Length: 181
Image (cartoon, rainbow, N blue to C red; front, side, top):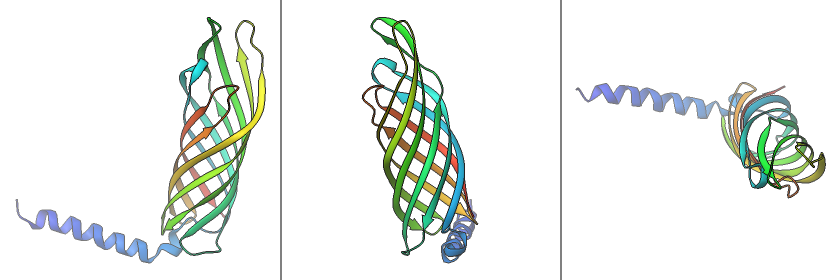
């Protein structure tokens, strides 16, 4: 194969990347309020060592005070599916709903951003099985993520953990979309 077969696509990709990064302020997620939704998978350890799907609604605000630095605050509602487990030698199920308030801090590389988040989750757990009852609590939640944004619309991939001893820790991997207006 001729060497130009590989060289031309690489040149085109390099040029497109350079143009995208030079136009980063116009393409980045932006400053202001945002709303979004996502879906993913939840994994629990301990008594409910299982995986299930979840969905999430998010709203927040990005502060644009410093270049290259992403700062923000957000509130999310997360609803998990049913986790199966065994408590006291008997079959049981667990469903969790949580409202989370978190601060975000990260780095912005034009349309690409990496961030960490931390805050608190107020959760309600419906535990079904003989001798089990519902539980609720407020515990720390933290995570990391990456975003790719174009013209106010951003795709996100993030990992979060609700650090709740009463229902065991919940690990969540979420893919979502947010719109900044």
